[in-house]
Image (tube, rainbow, N blue to C red):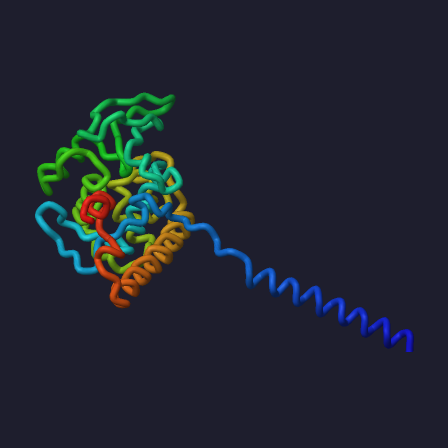
Length: 241
C-alpha cells in the first residue's frame, strides 16, 4: 500500500511539473522583432504602389530583405537602425546626407571612399544619380540606388523570386565585395561573408517582412481608414493627418 501511495505521489508530482512547464511555454512572450519598428529596415511600399519617375522601385518584402542583407554583409546593419545610412568606410559617420561625402578613408590595409548603407563609391553614386535622378544622399535615395544597381547586374528578377541562392549572391559580388562568388571568395579579394550566414539572415528578414505585409493587408481589408493605418514613408505618415 505504501509503495502504491509513493508511486501515486510521484506520478502526481510529475504531472504538476509537466503541467507547469507546459503553462510556462504557452505563456512565454514572443521573441523580439529583428526589425526595429521605427526604422527603414521594416519599411515597405503600400500595397497599391507603382513605380514612378521619382521612386522607380517599389519596395516589396523580397526587395527589402535583400537590401537589409546587403547592409548586413557590408557592415552597416547596425541592428537595423537608420544610422547605417550614415556609415563611411572605416566606421565613421557622415554629418550630412545632403550628398555623397566623396572622401577617401584609410585603414591599416585598405583605402576607400565608400559611404552609406550600401557603401556606394563616388563614381557609382554618380552613375545612380545620372540614371534614375535621385536627389541628395538620404535613406530613400540610397534604397533606390541599391535597387538600381541590383537591376543593373540583371539580378532584380531573382531578387523578386524571394530566394537567396548562390547564383544570386555571385551575380551581386562584383557590386558588393562582401558578397561571395560561386567559389566562396570575394570578387575583389576582400573580406567576404559566408553564403550560409547571408542566407540565414535573409530568410529571417523575409519571413518577418512578409508577416508585416500580410498584417498590414489584413488591417486594410478589415476596413481600417487611412487615418488609422498608414503604410507609406514615415515622413508622409507624420504629415498627412
